[in-house]
Length: 99
Image 1 (tube, rainbow, N blue to C red):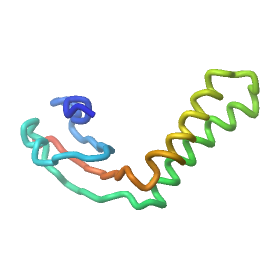
Image 2: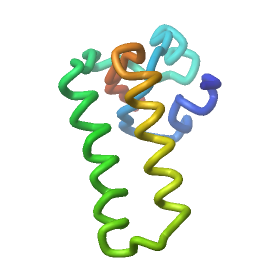
Image 3: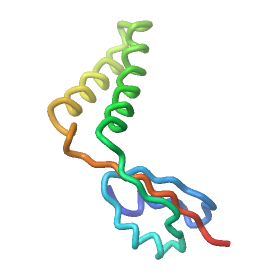
Image 4: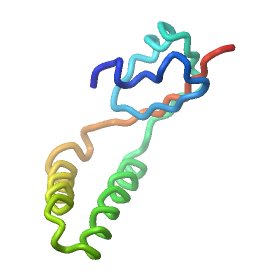
């Protein structure tokens, strides 16, 4: 993920960023100060991914012929179960732009 896509705009007064890996020292280039940093547990990651999957499954229950959603749901499940589960980490950074 390019750094420019992960840092909030320079005018953003308060931002929370969720990304896999982030050199928080780079936030100083945008004048943001780090207020809080914590790492998501595997349970939090599973809850996030399960909620994402649940939204797809609910949509499919109501619209079983929606092939686009079915393809996204199947692709996300495959990535989750055969790829990134237990590999990706997630960190929460709460940043503030000083006045």
